Image 1: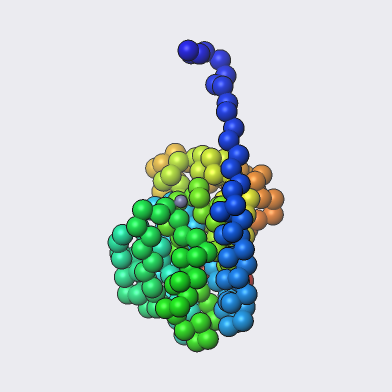
Image 2 (image 1 turned 90 degrees about the horizontal axis):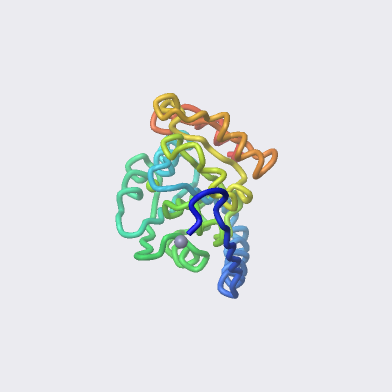
Length: 219
Ligand code: MG
Ligand code: ZN
């Protein structure tokens, strides 16, 4: 066993037919959304990064807009309830043992919505930064939220999700000092993965930075 020096590395590359099929389903979802004039935003981040808190702030700020949310979660309805309580229509999508939403699940959820009555749809993915990168949903923009409480390496450890991100939030910046995490360093990591991507520092529980985030999303 090797106990000193550099670790050995084994790389595994999986791009299965399943993923290809999901990309096609995502393209169909996009067509359906476009036909109904709905702009969809995929909200991705780990459990506890602040996805639901962000959507609660959005519900309050964009009151009066024709919008709704889908909230993906394994078994609970906590997030959907919080979003509804903040004033946005929300449908819970329980995925059971599945650790991410996929285009097929989202397509089914569309049937529960009156797409014609909507202009905006937020899709809160299951809390996870790994597989959602490989399962596009057909959304128009992909928002990734990380929080300083997750430590300094969230971007470098999840490169694929950041390479496809349209906007990135670094959340809970009010706790950065206590966590000994430098948001500027995370921001640098994100920009190396996706040059030019808008990175916004937020405190979604109090609402700081949320207006800037909405502007970056073109809303
Ligand atoms: Mg949530
Ligand atoms: Zn997964």
